[in-house]
Length: 261
Image (cartoon, rainbow, N blue to C red; front, side, top):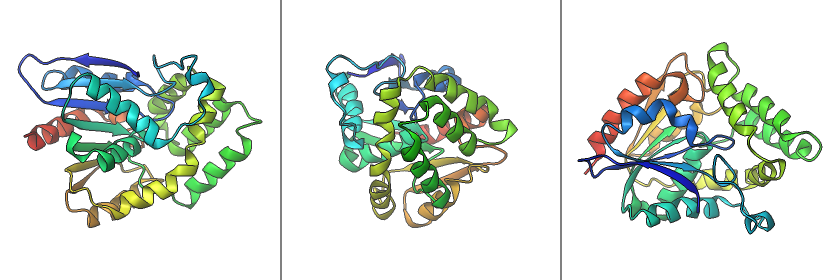
């Protein structure tokens, strides 16, 4: 089972589950925990091979990483904790996992907050993925990760986010990075489904105005899906919860409170 951490609220019955992106860990939510735990029950997860969810001996012989299997990891934890329904907050690749969970278990999802959401890979993103596939076996994974981090978060005001993700990525193993990178072959078919199917689950996209790779696709998506809304934070990049934590916390806490049954 994944490593996880919970913060229980004395009065609230509302759960909020945080899902980080590839190369990160639950520690990327450190600017959220203090405020959110004053309002809700909190679940923080470390995805496979990240943070304290290190591969077991059994996992060492299992190369089958799929979005479905990693989504099931999350469901296993919420089942274990007997959480019937939760709000889910994700960043970057974590938004793909949350959207996949909503596709398979819509009754478990009260709302989705998608920070730096990946809903389509544009031409530049696809070129990046192909370069990664080409060089992953000959270039140290940390070099590739630093390169991707710089392309996605290039500006000076993105530096804190960039360094945070690179620091967390150093805790991965080369083989673990390769397993996760192989997931790129699944992304395009999965994202096509996400764009075509409206779950009608309340969804807030929180995007940086400088998240040039991913913001345009989200703008198009929210025009078609009825329960979706978009908050764009200007002068902010991909990792909105780190770059603009006070604004992110204030608006997302309000959204979760408003969409709680």
